[in-house]
Amino acid sequence: MSQGQQTKRTWAARARAVPGILAKSPWWVALLVGGLCIWLGLTLVTKPLSSLGALTLYAGASFIISGISDLIENEKSGSGGIRMVLGWGWVAAGLVVLVWAGGAMAVLPVFIAASLIVSGVIRAMGAIRGKVRPADERVSAIILALADLIFGVVALAWPDVTLLLVAILFGARTLLFGLGRVWNALAEAITLSRARRRTAATSAVGTASAASTTRPKHFRRWMRVIGAVLSLVLAVAVAGLGAQLRSGAPSVDAFYAAPATVPDEPGQLLRSEPFTTGVPENAKAWRILYTTTGDDSTPAVASAVVLTSLKPASEPRPVITWAHGTTGYSEPCAPSNLPESFDAGALPALDHIVENGWVLVATDYAGLGTKGPQPYLIGQGEARSVLDSVRAAKALDTEQDELTMAEETVVWGHSQGGQAALWTGGLAASYAPDVKISGVSAMAPASDAIGLLANLHTVSIGSVFASYVAAAYADNYPDVSFNEYITPVARTFVREMSTRCLSEPGVLVSAVNALAIDKDRTIFSKDPTTGAMGDRLRENTPVLPISAPLFIAQGAADPLVTPAVQDAYVAARCKAGQELEYKKYEGKDHMGVVSPDSPLIADLLAWTQDRIEGKPATSNCTDLP
Image (cartoon, rainbow, N blue to C red):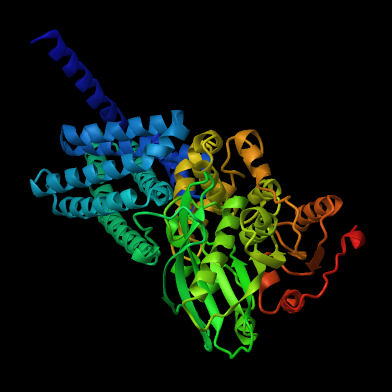
């Protein structure tokens, strides 16, 4: 025998000796280990969202315990070297997670998926080939194999869900392992106690042997089968839920595809088609595709909806240009692509727009529906999409008799769209002087990106919005590095959250992820208001002068765009000489301020009618504290 072969045999013998020692340890050692495992398992099962830091700690410990469990079972059943390798693999994975938490979390879902699939195959092959002898163990092995395979597929499809499911699944496994250790330890302790009271040493030994091989055996068999069935039920339930959530995710159709050659001139109408989703009675709408300009000054494509009242008009119809609030960051999240197209971006007073005989032009922004990164909270990109949508709608006007659009337009925007509205008013004169703006209304605008981002960690599911900002700024600005700002433990969660729309069922997963992240306070490893990202955020505070009348509305109970941040922004604009009207609405939060029962609606409609009629605007800058 060569020295290399002898070394391999020596290490193999040592590896087999460890689980053997564990399996034959004194009863009180097993009791302590079992109690620790029960505590750890219960913690994972009942508090999987304690925090990302705790999740990595618990997951690493559970992997180690799971591997030890496999090693002990392998020692008892003699399943073979493959099961031993798998057990040591889980132990090694647990050590890696504990030592290299951030990096491990990025690759953990794939590792878990592969390990579960391999584990399922090994279990199934062992049962089919007859290596598992008792019928109940064989049935359990086949059921667990199916569960492992299903969980493996789910882990590949839902990497961020996997990280949370791992906590629950391995928590349950750790809990069952601990219960088994405690049961065996107590059974052994009781048996030994009874044996000492026996007068005959041989009968005591026989009694101990009989007790240790009957009562625990029946319990273990029942627990094994029940645990396997529960694992399979959970796996099927998770897979079914995942399929249901994915089936509700929007996908874009061919309408949004850019032509082979995109014209250089912005505002060109590329195509149009009738649009009916959510369109009120006595109205008609079209979905349009048009050219705009990217932040790198290259031609880009965006989509929009143009809606007109069918109410007879004796003169050109007033135009409302709508900049929608946050619907998501990824391509399918365009309002025109969603089931509730107008509600998705929180458009107020749609019925009033139709009743008043106005025209609505509602951009999706470039990157929503169309290819390319969305300029999420990136003001100039949003504003160009808004201004070019009006230009394209004017081109549509020449094709559709129902439109008859007036020359001037009033800009409305809420939240993200409020920022877009402010930028639209400031950029119009230089970028699109042909688009005549007669007024700008910004409702709960994300006017101060620095102030907004600094506040997100205090807001429920604030991490979802932070993921959109992080993805957008990393995708749009070469000097902003995603990995530089996002903590390694949270990167998988953040990437996945940024791909989901707020209106799709899968956002529930993002909300669950946000609960885990928010307990760690932030997704950022570096203050996003500093460095390159901080500079870019400051660039996107709308400070360009707006020559048209400006109306800013704010909910006094808004936890997302806080009144204090808005007050400071308004005060700074007034100090810079910007004329504006600023109103706060008591008791109204971020969405409540544009709800149908909000007093803002009446104010907005009256203010808009004044702009249409060309009445002079008033400013209350001097009355503000």
